[in-house]
Length: 397
Ligand SMILES: Nc1ncnc2c1ncn2[C@@H]1O[C@H](COP(=O)(O)OP(=O)(O)O)[C@@H](O)[C@H]1O
Ligand SMILES: [Mg+2]
Image 1: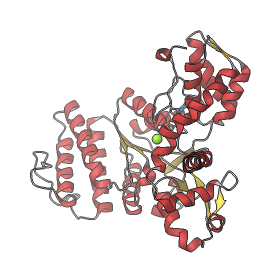
Image 2 (image 1 turned 90 degrees about the vertical axis):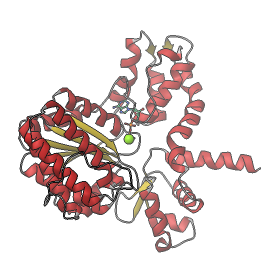
Image 3 (image 1 turned 30 degrees about the horizontal axis):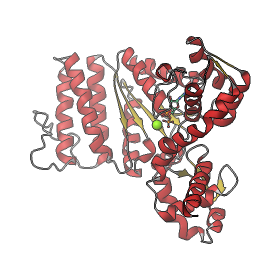
Image 4 (image 1 turned 180 degrees about the horizontal axis):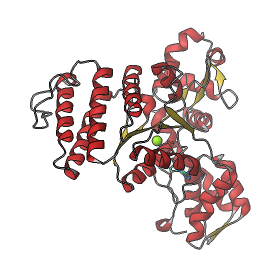
């Protein structure tokens, strides 16, 4: 069928034609936003799940909802190696400038800008010519101790107070939060804790891979009760079907039950895989009644595109020995495995492989579901590894 009218959206953070199976999480976000706006307590909302389950998509949706109900909302995608303070400075600056635009005479906003200026001068060594002065004098004695935890608390309280006085709530949405280092995560969570306690209209959302909850416990202790964790998994059968039939139905196209089963079998309900196979099936189908044969015919191209766009982007950042580790894990049965067994597969000891495993966790390819266990962060990554090996063997022979 005409690719120009193809409704499916395989691609990181791409808004799907039907956001299936995420109503409960979206409703929780909606309540947290409305409560925070009214100055009532709401927990930080944390979206956790494998790659391709729809975390970024949902964050985008929540940010739009926040904007619709009057929030100034900023979304950031964190990257491995980012320094939180450097990432936050332009975010805070944008928030304060928007607050100022909406409320030109709010003195607290100016005050908060001076606190930000103070924070900047004590946390950033600027190279010549870079202007971080905000054209304003610093508020001496505020957010300028040089200790990130302390200064971030003061700064975020100051911004939250400015938001309250201006009557405009603020939200920040952090994507890929698992890339934050321990001390940065600690500083951020402590600051969030304080703004929640004093009920400032400042709400934080986070999204990250399954290692995020452990990192949070490591950073602030397991007793932190100020976070609502939402585990995003694969979609249920009715949601998979809705994700497909709803958009095609609107375009006057039908699909057989066998074709839907085939899509479900291929994708196991994982949103990225589902969008990919549905997208290529649409392009291959000859008529407005999609059949199982269309799905089968689309599998090859779907896998090729998934390998390039979804799997390879992370894989290419790994070294040969890391790839060997991934291969050993891929050769074991699906699901999480004991690190000791992965090491055995490589004829190495767990201790000697510890640093490799840690780097792979840092690079976002594997995570540790339980102590001493390891698993891939992307669904069906083991199959990708096997395809890589087959391709390599064919080339070598
Ligand atoms: N609830 C959903 N229903 C159907 N498709 C979805 C859903 N959530 C996300 N998708 C699709 O899945 C893919 C991956 O989404 P993304 O938000 O990038 O995942 P993540 O951030 O968890 O890696 C995108 O192609 C998106 O269009
Ligand atoms: Mg994402």
